[in-house]
Image (cartoon, rainbow, N blue to C red; front, side, top):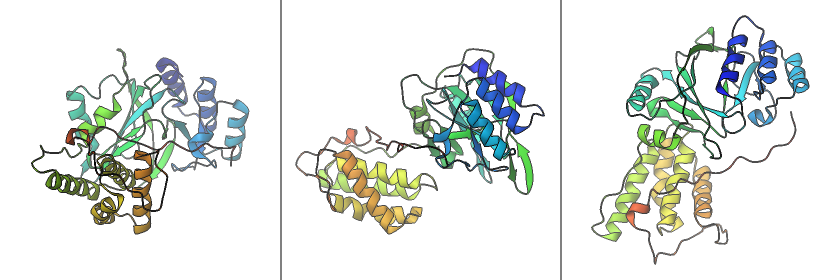
Length: 315
């Protein structure tokens, strides 16, 4: 794990007029794992993307020797020791509004330093929470993404092409005060509140009402959120004794409206039921007993996520 001062110092030195290859070497000398991305873009050049990030000088020399103009990617979360809040500005979506609201609520304070992005947005860097996995997520409607475990970010002096022009990532400000870890789960719930169940009047009617609210929420998921949103909603139904066939019927139309295909919807719902009940034997149409439904307050208690698969070698 790289300390904030060391990381910021390396970025400061590399953010001048250094070639990208020299900047990558400087970051590696400071202990920051890096990997190459396409020149002028964000797509990784290695076979396994951010999983291939290295601090081996020889490997970095080989990568940038082959692609001297490659942008510099750094994995977020445990591999690097920092996480980032990505504030986007796209058309009517202005992530700075959500970031300001979160800051006033005390949920986005304690950043280490800020970086301006080519689109006019901002990256706010925070120390990763030691010993705790912080999964990446998106809150598209708020214009904010969280880059944690399972994610990566481009760092200065990388440059990308936007709207026909080339612009770069630039250091903006360092926090001379004390930095603090970010509660990414609370921030996500603040920016993208999830539907809350009402007090039950009739268990059967309440179940239908909750399923309807979940369906509305799934239908509103944007690109990058829809598959995970469907998985989360299906897990809630599984945990509350709703048969998989009913969950599939109740969520399919909403997931289709969000942009998912029929095959992907079916696979995601079945995967959610297997994840919610791992002791049950997998089948093509898993079902859940209906005898002991959970209390309504438990519907939104957990957020199961899948872990990244293991990686091998380089591409």
